[in-house]
Amino acid sequence: MNGDENQRNARPRRMPPPNYVPGSAGSQHLKPTEVLRRDGRAYEPPQAYSQARRQQQPPPPPPRRTHAPTQQPQPYREDAARRRRQPPPAPPAGPPTRRGGDPRPPRARRKRHPFRWFLIFLLVLIVGSVAGVIHLDGKLQRIDALANYEDRVGDTPGTNWLLVGSDSRTGLSTDQESELATGGEVGGERTDTIMLIHVPKSGSTTMVSLPRDSYVSIPGHGRDKLNSAFTFGGSQLLVQTVEIATGLHIDHYAQIGFAGFAGIVDALGGIDVCVPTPLDDPLAGINLEAGCQELSGPEALGFVRSRATALADIDRMNNQRLFMAALLKKATSWSTLVNPFKLWPLASDTAKSLKVDEGDHLWHLARLGWALRADTVATTVPIGGFDDTDSGNVLLWDKAKAGEFFDALASDQQVPEALLTR
Image (tube, rainbow, N blue to C red; front, side):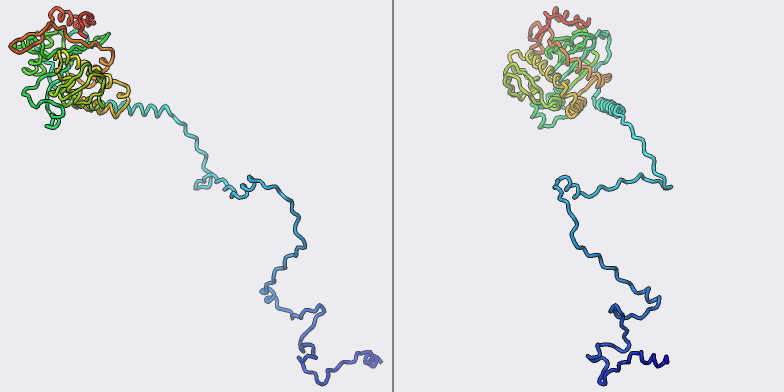
């Protein structure tokens, strides 16, 4: 019963048409082994576990946006835009680490010591100055000028210098002799300038011109012109003659020649001198107009040597004093003393151009220059007149006034105004 009922209830099996060909249009592209799924996708047979791991699943597609996000309008600001354009600052570097990994402890800030550097600079300056003075002192040419002799004048108060300008051409070439108008070689060395400088313990320094034609007694040679003493016996006899004639003890001696004289002026860049009268002297190589003007080395040398004036030697002594005042004014000015490019050439040229006594040093010359920098009384020995002798035309001292004049200096007193020759 059940079998019959099942057979009745069973759906009759449809048979394919007789002309059915697998794969034809009427077959709906079904393959005999194809399995259909309810969701319409193709059936995939199950895979092994190892095959499932190898297969990479594609990432899920991003969600679709249905609308744009809400935006808020913002005002434009230049500073904000600039900040957006600038790259972010780099992170601060960490403290350096040691080999062990621990950070290096911060170093203590070093203190500055400006006073210490000032002391170092001052020490270098002092050492350099001392070394420079020693070097220049070694350049001085030393001679035995202050020799002792029998019945020499004893020491007198104050300090007395004898400055001598000689006509020495030593070291000059033919062209230099022509430039300086020295007149060529004339035989023995002579003196063109003789000055006695008295530096008192207090008060003004006195600079006395001693005319080279002064008629004086020369030991061993009788009476003759003062400059003849230098020709007869050099510096020693000249010093002895001056000491006997003046009664003053000479403490220091300095001598300079033509080349050194002009070199000192040129080292200063020239000096300003007020020429009292026009001076045209071809023998001295100058042609100067009256008035204040700057003189070069050769011009200054001709100015102090020329006697082409009405009073000859007297005018020349006045010109020499004018020159000395102008030279010392510029040499001791602050513009020269604080300028190493002027001071060093000046000191170097002066040192190598001077002849000094064996006991003299550069610091003695510096003291002399400083003493002459202050108010200086410039004068000449009182003159009594002129006379013609076997030595030619000579200059005579006023014995009474000259005695009083030099007695005042020997006692370290100021010379009376009535005895000064301006």
